[in-house]
Length: 72
Image (cartoon, rainbow, N blue to C red; front, side, top):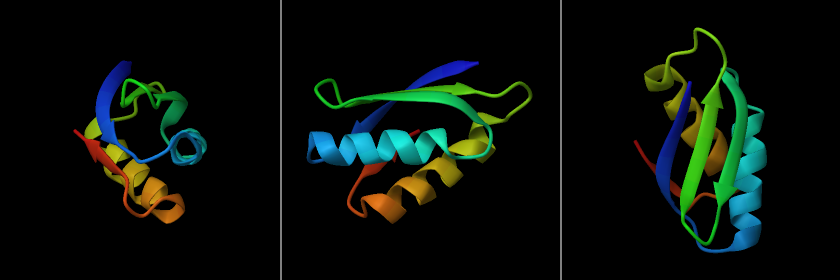
C-alpha cells in the first residue's frame, strides 16, 4: 500500500535525512520525500498498518530533524 503525506521541513538536506529515517523504519518498504512539493510518499510492507507505522516514522524523523512535521 502506498500513501502520500504532507510534510513541513525547512531545507532539502533535512528532507533527505527524513527520507533515510523513514526508509529505515520497520513496516516501511520504501519512502520518497519531495522537498519542493513538501510531500512524502510511503510504501508500506505487506500487512503493515499505516496508523501504527506512521507515528514511528515521525519519531524517527524527529531524531534527525527535530522541527520537521508529518501530517497524517
